[in-house]
Amino acid sequence: MTSPADLFALQELDLKHDARRALIADIESRLAETEALIAARETVAEATAALDGLRRQQHDLDIKLTDLDAKIKPLEERLYGGSVRNPKELTDLQKEDEGLKARRRVLDDEALSLIETVEAATGALNAAQGGLRRTEIDWQADQERLRADQTQAQQESARLQEERSLRTQGMDRSALGLYENLRKAKQGRGVARIERTTCQGCRVSLPTHVVQRVRTGATLVQCPRCERILVGS
Image 1 (spheres, rainbow, N blue to C red):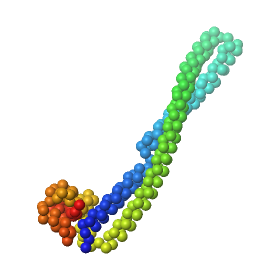
Image 2 (image 1 turned 90 degrees about the vertical axis):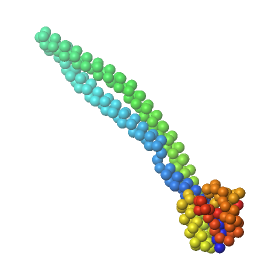
Image 3 (image 1 turned 180 degrees about the vertical axis):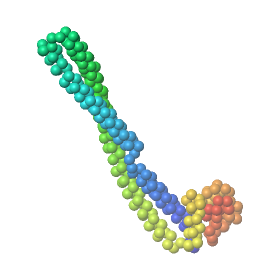
Image 4 (image 1 turned 90 degrees about the horizontal axis):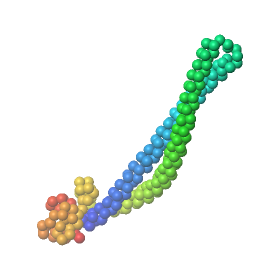
């Protein structure tokens, strides 16, 4: 006969096994990139894109400045070279030269301001990359610890499963079936102890005749209220 004590011992084993399986599931859910790592990578990507955009602006400004210089040089050669003597033409050339130089000063100011912005963006990118490196180091260390914990939990789970198989080999099939069904219905606890005539599963005081039947151990007795299999303390 399979006694309530046998089933209670099996339940303790199953609860340990449940805990290991829950731990394994938790570890598996954490064996992935963390929000912190993803955020750090996004920060680097955003900083890189911002710096690239600023450098493209610098490149465009350089082209504009080169184009202006290409216009100013021959203009000044005509203006100061003595080849143009007509006063009106000289005045027009001077106005055009002044306009181009004014435009160049504006672009020079933009270029200087952009240099400062690029330096700040470069610093932001360097900081983001440093933050990413630190986050990756922490994440990799955590992953190694999780994998070690996973291996240990898997080994313990396998050992508990083997122990369960050995324990249930000689058990009565009907008693084991009742226990399994109750375990599913009662959040893993199909067997409950009696302490001072109270079922520890539902905390209800049991009738005297029920307690006496449990103590005789002649058959499996279930709690009248929660239906768990009762075992004496």
